[in-house]
Image 1: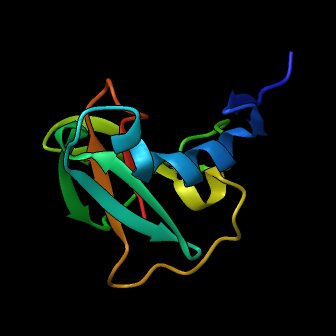
Image 2: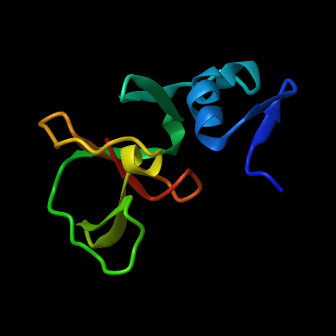
Amino acid sequence: MSKSTHIHNQPLNRRSLLCKSILRLNKFMKTGKYLTFTLADEEFGIGILKVKEIIGMMAITSVPRIPDFVMGVINLRGKVIPVIDLRLKFGMPPIDYTDRTCIIVVRRSAVGPGYFL
């Protein structure tokens, strides 16, 4: 079975679905507030209630035998949090981190434990 999804009879791959619909959730769900961010000129968003906190970049400990998009883990007040580079996860080219690069820590029920942008 294909990994694509159909909305209004138009096939969309997972990345297209996320890119095109995550900020348009109001059409399908209750109105809410979203944390939005941009990756490679594409807008993304996550429900604000799923965001635990936003922190600046910090030392990331590498872990062997993990996917390329998982940068490693951080220790956040005694909790080990995996850090995922969404640019790499979505097949975008990597970029150097800047002072605007941050880590978004999300609740476990969201997409994943920690992302940086």
